[in-house]
Length: 269
View 1 (cartoon, one colour):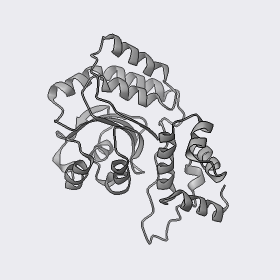
View 2 (view 1 turned 90 degrees about the horizontal axis):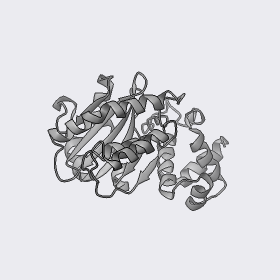
View 3 (view 1 turned 180 degrees about the vertical axis):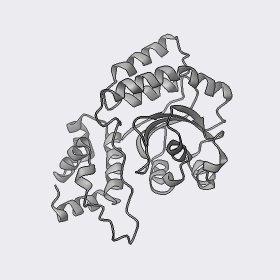
View 4 (view 1 turned 90 degrees about the vertical axis):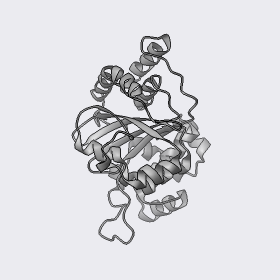
């Protein structure tokens, strides 16, 4: 997972030099692992916001957070561990199959839980979320989110995003045509429930790891630290840390020591 640092959003209306420059950057990244990060940056030029997320939704697996910017680590951790089950956008993605622009404030109350709208929103420190749902295959969607900490997204904000949706959707489809998995990253599998002996979280772990995650594990098993892994994989230290978090979720562990211990015990790597 990618993680960045958000700065105050700069608005650049479609047709401006800044808009065309970012559109070109997004187009040039079609087919790459960071395409959606550039696409989100393009979307973010349209509407003021304080933080961003990219989440892969699936009918079969929990939401997989692929990228964040301006989001505190504890907020990301609490979402992945405690609140993903009540994410109302995940509920909506299961019901709709077309690309859409939605906001938390205007979602149907039937899909919104107080645990999310009060507990998580209060802890995360945002007032409203604007989400762009981009279906990829049946039962899966890539979702781009902008969050605002001071106000609700207005009808004018929503209209501005809908105005650029043809370009956003067109680039998304072009990207999918280059990807055999039709996702930026495979969704994570749900953590096992405590005391559930019916499922061994390690039994099929190897089949659920992406090539990059396998590279990361190989380096971890060699005792490489975060800086060395970042240099070897040519990614930032923050990205390494976020890959670790996703690995812990898939492996149902909470630390690198537990991950290494289990891998050594099972002899998987």
